[in-house]
Length: 215
Image (cartoon, rainbow, N blue to C red; front, top):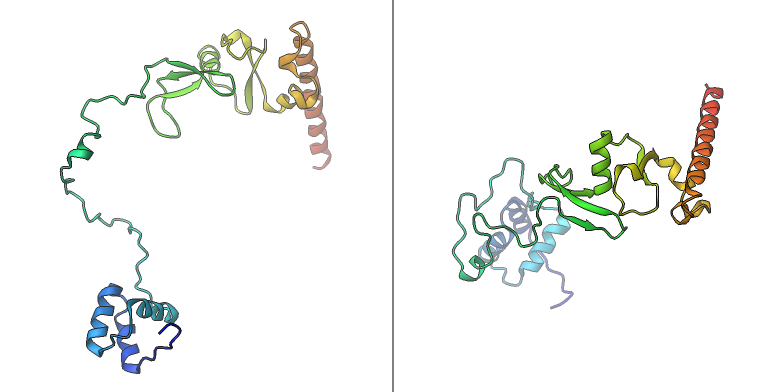
């Protein structure tokens, strides 16, 4: 009956504890047969072990160096699954040729290049086309820098249209600064960029002086 207390003798408890490392269903079946305890369900048996802290010692994880139970076995042939399996030499339908271009959601042109993907290990990856062309001409982008589009047209990927600037300079050019560089008239863009660079340089000089005063 639900809620009924189940009593166990000392001998039964000793046996359960001694067999706690066995498969629990197997141990329960033998316990019920050995002690004639058909009134003790597997749920009761399992709950008792949990209350007593008599764990099996297994956590369901593979140990380091442990071999999988199906190592070396071949998957049985199944006509339905075989129809969807990759065949040797087959090319996934979503694979695109090298140097394929696309426009990402942020409006930048991306291009597929023969460079290792640092996230997946794949020998190819998509990257911003403007950065790829800029680095081909100028070398790796310096750490802590970003490429800024000079004419505001993100699809203009020519290296001359992009300048490497410190990332700390970007907030002085975006909408939060009130300057909105990308939307400014072309004739004002050079002045806005020069002003932002000057402010950034002055700020860095101030930080340097403060650091020296504290040493």
